[in-house]
Image (cartoon, rainbow, N blue to C red; front, side):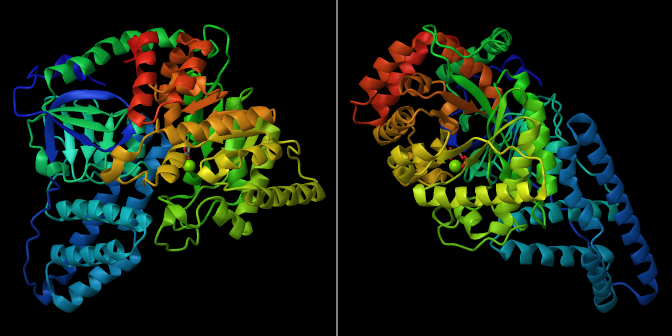
Length: 596
Ligand code: PEP
Ligand code: MG
């Protein structure tokens, strides 16, 4: 990808005041360049009445346009498959289904017969009717499909009008794309040499577009409200895909800060590469296991390339998204066994299904709830649905034969839930034994500590599992009552809040008293400002996004455990987030300034 600081115009702070926007970071990296605002161009759909004798011609034109659109999508899919992989190209399967959708095609033909309008008008009206009905349903999966249908509809209309399909960002200079939303095909068609990054108003970490951005390695921030109202093409922008920050008219100081990072980045990356084979160990010998989080089976390769010691969190729910039926035991078994084999001899911690909250899928019968994050999410859903839970547990136990697999339960609130889940796991083992199936009967079981009630029950939970992994993403949201996906209250989302420190402290102490290890797999584990604090609080493992592993390793290797313990002790006496954060951050700056 192009180096944004090399090629962008150096118009430091010359055009209006500096303005910061916060969004959701979905693909890491930093880019600086000029904005190119992408407005979705709706083709003018010409309207005319047709004569009965024109009907066959209109139908033939429609068929030709559908065939051409299908060919275009297949070509796009092939291009993606060869450049980034078959899994990402699979995103276009949904688009292809639209051009092959018999119900939609028949309705267009019926409209043509009934209304006698030109075929462009008939098709446009039917496609829009579909989109409006889907958009009205409160289901994130169906809303994603609206984006797919609109994308395909635009393509069909362009073919009917004899126009070329356009790739977005038609500029011959490097730029940062700003848009309300981007379709996966928009993202896939981005010229990686020219597009330095992108920022959108809509979107979430789990959208197809976000998945694609990570696969393409383009820094991206989504979910910035009303962004397009504030940015015009040509504006000076800086995008920080690590923290989800977008800066309009970055000041000299901001640019210098980010500029230094960018200039040193390659050097640092090179130096970090040399750490790949080294263990993550503090200068005074405290060993921390450093692993990575994955969402897709394909990411397992990357984990080892970045020098992680296995997978600390495999978010299996991604296997259940964007499909009509949940994966069966066999599909899951193959998937988990593949990850286990890739990771050997390191371990992979397979987390059982964490569906609900912000993750919804058509493949499961999920209740509509007023507060989904506080509702029937994760283990709660699984305990209610043994027909879904048991095939997954069986698949994980069977995959244990192919590598070093551990199982982990999400959203455990206390011992009752843990015991109920363990009872089902034992039942699965008995069934597998009776069937003569090969599986790992001694598989280690751990629990996530991501509810304050779990942290405060850690003493009892620790007696019943082999390890803990603290899910700070949820722990912070539930402890401070701050919705983790609501940008309006993002300033209240404070990892260094004294209450969070106490919850982490209680958890690590309880784990160690019971002789088990305790990791952190929330985003906090990848925040280099807070690593001195986590190390000092005694965590034994950190699990983070694969691309952050080298930096976290460098941080750990630059710290003294004894100093971090003293720092954590001092932090525990402070009353506010800002003081705790700056204490840890300034220690981090002293020990590994090159990472800032
Ligand atoms: C967490 O809550 O910190 C966590 C790792 O789980 P998730 O982000 O998948 O909810
Ligand atoms: Mg969580």
